[in-house]
Length: 570
Image 1 (tube, rainbow, N blue to C red):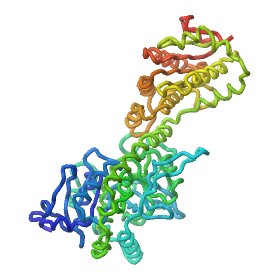
Image 2: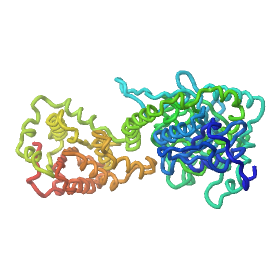
Image 3: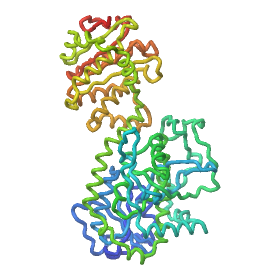
Image 4: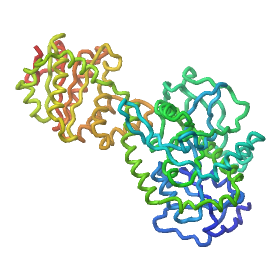
């Protein structure tokens, strides 16, 4: 093809294949795979005011292909659904779509110690009850505390599945054409002036780590130690391999190996995680093709993205060579299959639902908040009927509950029953606000020197933040922003960050009451002054809707000077 004299496109009704990608680097790879790239718009092209897609036109083999990319900054199922809906409206002769780009692997070792590698290609294929794609963040809770998927999506169209089987058979007989297609990439793409090229990035940069080994920082894994790395047999070639199975689609970038491995348990045939397919696969006849650019964990970086985009595009090109033109013409038009408005409404509804549920799952995994209900329930079990009634009806506690931005210190010697009183208080406060407006919250924490995750400053802060977050996660944008600021959960937030988010969360509620028990059990002991300072900082936020009560041994009285704000447990 002479780029200085590109051919004119055929008529609009001749375009039967829709190719959708999410990133500009995927679009670049797609355009390189065209046998012919057309200049200008096809005859009869008419784009409505609601279609904001930018289209590219070309031919691959006997198929005329229209390519669209999500707008800059747009990712996820909703944006993909809008791109597909607009494409089908503008090009009503399209029979099927190809969703081609990058994704994160769900690695699993086989008997040879081999697993999916970076640069390999994952292809959606029905297995058992799954249509080849399922929405992993659309789950419902069961009564036994388990979950089950709500979103298993439709399988690819028959014309593509038939071509897929033929292609797989030919790969048994001889080599794939993907490596040859990769040679079509321009020299500039292979060796760009800056950034990684559309070439294999070297086996030394393809490292899979154990799920519990977190990234140590930086844009690469140069600081990550080999002790956390999974040992895999070296391959004889860097040519990509192809993996067929279920692709998990969700509305949030997955960089958490625990979430990744939970998906693997829920859907054993799952091989890849991505973000757009859930917007297309419910009604749009489509096949999902994903080049593997990371392992869906905290070690994710961008250096493999161009090459992964190229291997996916090269696979799509080879697949179209196995799709017979007469089969495409006989296939139903996508516009006849899809009820476009229903598709958009369903995708939006599912996305709104998962914004809360998936994020909550990710936030919990990231913060790993200690559960203070264990200590509280143990103390309540030890409480005899009527114990602490004097405290619950005391003048000091009454004033504390009635005073904006109030502080109260419950103190006493070891064994005086402070934890039982604190537990009874949390129960009493919850009962007072039971069935009232959701904008009121009671949160608490019990320091426990015998529990490794309940004796440090950040243990308390992570627990308090998470408790407020779960009261009304839909309104707690501050936590979601913090999650993003921490590289989508790649590392834990600092004390200062947690304190800042706690303040933001408190401001979201009409009233918040915080009970913190056992300050003298903080470890190391020298952090007691720091803990007092943090709690004082929470109180000094001067939020009128906040009331703070703490309990501790009387021996730390030097930190508290105002006797009017204290009450003895004995």
